[in-house]
Length: 511
Ligand SMILES: Nc1ncnc2c1ncn2[C@@H]1O[C@H](COP(=O)(O)OP(=O)(O)OP(=O)(O)O)[C@@H](O)[C@H]1O
Ligand SMILES: [Mg+2]
Image 1: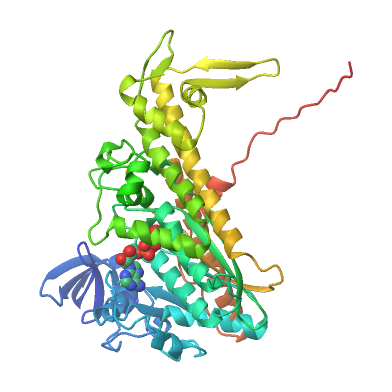
Image 2 (image 1 turned 120 degrees about the vertical axis):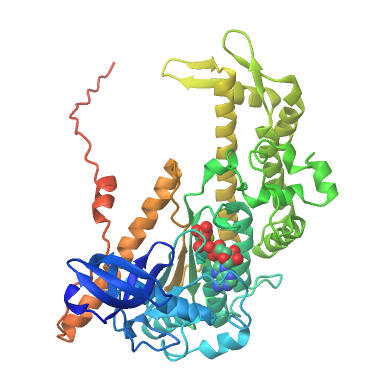
C-alpha cells in the first residue's frame, strides 16, 4: 500500500464524519502522510487509513463495481453515493445486486413498462435492477429446469422487505395467470396479498424502521412446466415474541394491535377496546401513531387482504378476537392472596372477564392458568400457588404463547389456502429475514437473529468466493484471495459447543 502512495498521489483518507474524504498527499513522514483534502483542510493520517483514488473513474460512477480500478471501501462507497445522487439506487457487483434505500417512492422504477423491458433481457444489458435478478432466476429455471433462491440481506431498515416484495411482484408478473381460484382469486394475487397480512401481525415500528419485520420469511413460489405459478409455500422463522409484552420507547408493538384499536366502532364495542393508551402492552411506549400511516385504513386493507388470501370472515373475526383478548390479558393485575398466593385485582376484574370471554374459556381455568403452576410428577399432579410477581410472568408467558401460536396458525392458513403444487419440480425461493441490530443490552432473541444473519453472510461469502475461485481456475487466471472479514471463528464459538458426555445405563425391571 505504502509503495503506491507518494507525494502528489490522489487518495481517500478516513474521516470521522464522512467515512472517507478525498485529497492529495503533500508530505510523507514515516508511516504518516499529510493530505490536503478537496474541501480545503490539511489532515495527517497513518497509511493504514489511506487508499489510492482512481482519477479515471467516470463522473457518474460505474453500474458494476467489478469495473472499478480499486475495489476498496472508499471506492465502493463513493461509487454507490455518486449513483444514489442521480437516483440510481441499484448497482451490480458481478452478479450480486446492491440496493441503496431511497427512503422515497421513485417514479417509474417499478411500473409495468419497466417490468416489460426487463423481461428476457440478459443480466447487464439494461441498468441494474431487482427485476433483472428475478428474471435471471426465472430464465435459468425455465431453460435449465433448475430451482433458484434469491437471498435478500442487509441490516434493519436497509430495504430487504421492500426488495422482496418487488421480486415477488416481478415473478408474479412473469408467471401469472395460471390456475384461478373458484372465486377469481389468482394464485399470484394470493401470494402477493399474503405480504400485508403477515406484515400486520409480524411487523412493528422500531427505532430504525417504521415497518420492521420481526420475523424471518422464506417464500417458495412453485411453477409448472410452462413457467406459470402453480403454488406457493411460506415458511416463517424466529418471530420476536417478547415484543407482545415488552416494548421500548419510541417503538411500537406489532401493527395488528393498533389496527384493531382503530377498527370501525362496531368492532371496538364488540371487543370493548378503545384508546391504545389504556392498554399496558401498548402504553409502555409513547409512540402510538405513525406519520403518514392510517391504522383505520390499514385495518380495512388487512381485512381485504385476508379475504383475497382465503381467510374466511368467521376466521378473521376469531383472529381479531384473540388480538383483543391479548390486550385485555395484559391489563390483568394481581394482588397478594393468602399464603404467598395471588388473586386478580378487583380493578382488573373487567379485563379478566373480557379475556376469558374472548378466548371462550372457563373463568376458573384462566384464573388457575394465571395464578397457579401445575407440576406433574409420576405420582401426582401438584398445583402450586404463584405470588403476584410470578403471576405477572405467567400472564406474559400466556400472551406470548397465544400470539406466536396465532401467527403460526395464520401462516398455516395462508399456506393451506394458496396451496402447494405437489407436481411442481421447480421453484424460486426468496428469503427475507430481519436485519442485524445491536443494542446496549441484547436479548436472547437478538442474539438468535444476529447469529442467523452472520450464518447467511458466511454462506454468501463462501458461495461467492467459491464461484469466483472456480471461474478463475477454469480460465487459468492468476489471482490472490480478496481479504474480507471472516467471522467463522465467532460462528464456531457459538455453534460448536462441546458438551461433556455422560455415560449411563438403562435398567429395566419387570415387576
Ligand atoms: N426500493 C424502495 N423504494 C422506496 N422506499 C423504500 C425502498 N426500500 C426501502 N424503502 C423504505 O425504507 C423502509 C424500510 O425498508 P424495509 O422495511 O424493506 O427494510 P428491511 O431491510 O426489511 O428492515 P427490517 O430488517 O427492519 O425488516 C420502507 O418502509 C420504505 O419506506
Ligand atoms: Mg423487513
